[in-house]
Image (cartoon, rainbow, N blue to C red; front, top):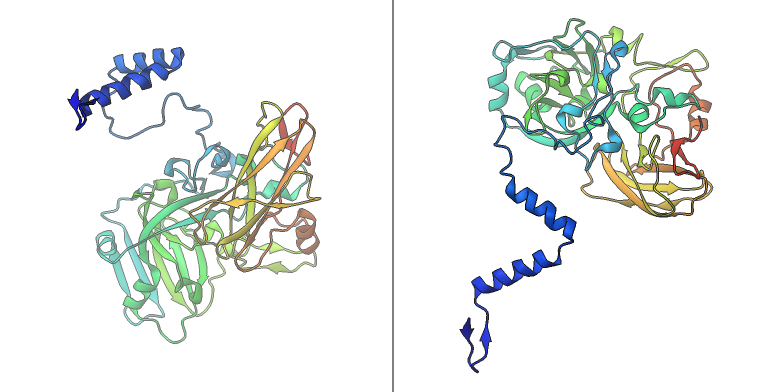
Amino acid sequence: MTTGKRGSQRPSRRAFIGLAGAAAAGSLHPAARAQTADAIRDLGETPSDYGRPSPFEDSKRWSRAPDATASSSNTPLADLEGIVTPSGLHFERHHTGVPAIDPDTHRLTIHGLVERPLVFTMDDLVRMPSASRFHFIECSGNSAREWSPAGAPNVQMSHGLASCSEWTGVLLADLLDEVGLKAEASWIVAEGADAGLMSRSVPLERALDDVMIAYGQNGEAVRPEQGYPLRLLVPGCEGSISVKWLRRIEVAHMPSMARDETSKYTDLLPDGKARQFTLVMDAKSVITRPSGEQKLDGPGFVEIRGLAWSGRGTISRVEVSTDGGDSWVDAEIEGPRYAKAFTRFRSPWRWDGGRHVLMSRATDDTGYVQPTLAALLETRGRSTIYHNNRIKAWEVHESGEVTNAEA
């Protein structure tokens, strides 16, 4: 103890820390004290080569629910936090499997209507000025089940062909500046190194905007199923146009009319015409908690949570309804809020124990408002499986169980 100016005694810093520790320990619940003591006695594991989730986490939920028949897997959106999807849980969609590509021998060729055709190695690309940005990728077939009122039983199956990552790479505009564009150039055609030689056409105006040649994902190399060692990233547009395992870009005066932009990824309309190059993924949202196959513990406070995104830009508003769309309230939009990226929202709600239908509706900064299923069917009919951004509804039953509201 030390003595103050008036002779009073006050604890030293070391004694104060000891007293504080004792007070904290004394305030613990007996069960918490026992748990703390057990943790202290356990020296724990040594560092591992690569981090992994806690064994206390439900390993079953950390699954992308692969569908072998469709060569795809779905992200468990309802079980994730924040806006970034762990790389190992990013959804997959490929047509001819995942190729094994050696980055030391991989090349990116840019040719066509250019002044100086060039071939880039991975080292060439990594040495160039880079950019890192948060963007979602969504398969245009995401929510395909939602064209039917039956829909899907949970968020993973209804909306899980969408994920959001931090992508790192070289802006395509910089590479096109290196090769020099000829006056008649108006499109690019990107081709992958997979067995199917997946290729898609992108308008040159779009390619010169925020399109990236990505080699990094969430701080590490792009995962093999996401296009290792190199993929095209066209933010806000349907996933198939962000060609994976990118090996060639041809600058052209017209689209290539490849298989995957004619017979596939084209919307057939009721009048027999087709919407083609409908690249942008419109504003969309989904409530992730409470949602299908979850259960509320009992009446009382519930925080409604969800995700919203738009390929047009930034989410500016999300509304939530607990009465099937009869009335709406503004949800709180959480930060960070990036253009063409996942955005979190939440809304407080007091459940009275009765039946309720929960819905969310997103608006982006262009003024576009997420539509109902009826509105989509009126304009597009039932002949397409793509670009379904309908308002999704979940039903909360008196038992607390949550199901698809329209099943």
